[in-house]
Image 1 (cartoon, helix red, strand yellow):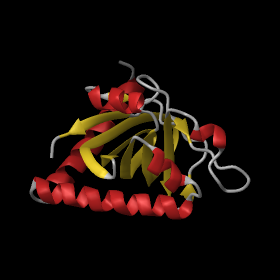
Image 2 (cartoon, rainbow, N blue to C red):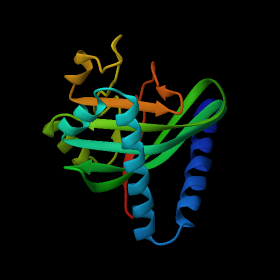
Image 3 (cartoon, rainbow, N blue to C red):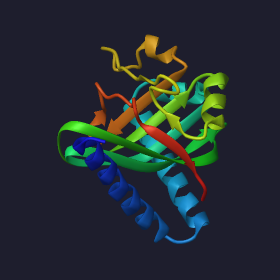
Length: 187
């Protein structure tokens, strides 16, 4: 393992333990589920308000995975972590965590909401059956593009898995979820 990989793994470990410690200190599992569900509701509402056509897509999706706050931090080597929920038929079907490592020109920290829409039953079934799912390796995630009319691009809307990333400034462009690891968590 080279030095950068070692540092990335170490940073992810620190991020993961910090987020786990924070979550654990919030109390019982029912309270944690309620907190995640409320954050998911808020993130979906923000997406629907800010991105024209997103409500129609989430309504058509077979499942919607929402990470209301994915925190990224780093200095040269970075990582990100967040917890969220999978919604199927408007109801929570499970809780998940997301982690990713990155190397490059990084400095500082940020937070974004990440949404993964499973537009086909097959893509949702493969995700649910996985013992750990990696975007780009287990399935390709097409990041949503907004056209000149500020609506979702029609080519994007026809893909089996669609991703959105929303910061305080709005929909994030030129972002890839490739390499992002998603695991089910028991709450």
